Length: 294
Image 1 (cartoon, rainbow, N blue to C red):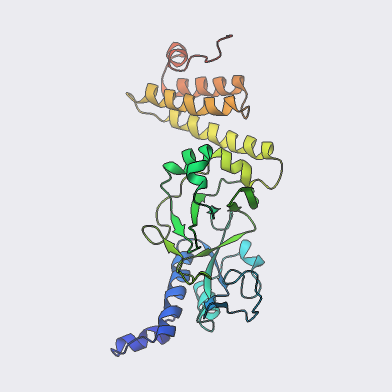
Image 2: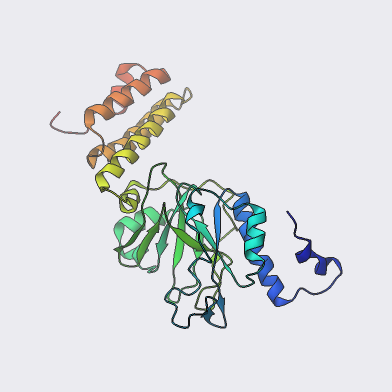
């Protein structure tokens, strides 16, 4: 990776010109994202309040790709390709291709009030501990990053007022890109994605679906059931009952929404409990039937 044409000025003790500093910041971010396993593209940036595409009537200033980008949904750009892409575009913004290629999906919240006014969103995001990017949008706005669920996810727009989602086939603008408002995109806390991303809640998985919501929910529920039974199976002595109780509660939420059949859930929990070393009586006592008709 050849970056000497960026670092020579510093090595000689010279000040880095503003334009070069901006190039370096965006390219450095692009390279860091690539090193973290993300698919990166270059977007037109903002210069003097206008999009660098040159169209004074641009409908998506600072947000649309420079050149073709669809192939980046299947193949990530290499460091050398990113250097060649960003070097001649000093004001380019940085884009991250969402979906399976990068292992993530993004919730784009233009209306922060949705977090407090909508009960479901308040519950899901109230304890969110994943990366958050402040977008620079006037009136507030942020991106919340989740782990890709492992099956095809589509994009959506305005399922709730001010709420969009980007999954397979989409992309988002990433820090330190410049928003049309003149404010840079920035992580709320630590830069980058070096920590594990949080799982995508089933309610959001249904929103991201490109096909029938039920189909996606069923796939997601199956993965959730597998995750919970795995946790039970490997639980250590002294933690088995509490693990079983927690997992039974989580699986019960899926039974309640109809995503998993009751018999399937009980059978899976029983089998996992037996593998963990509990006997049948202990399993039934720890997670008894909740339906009063039984």
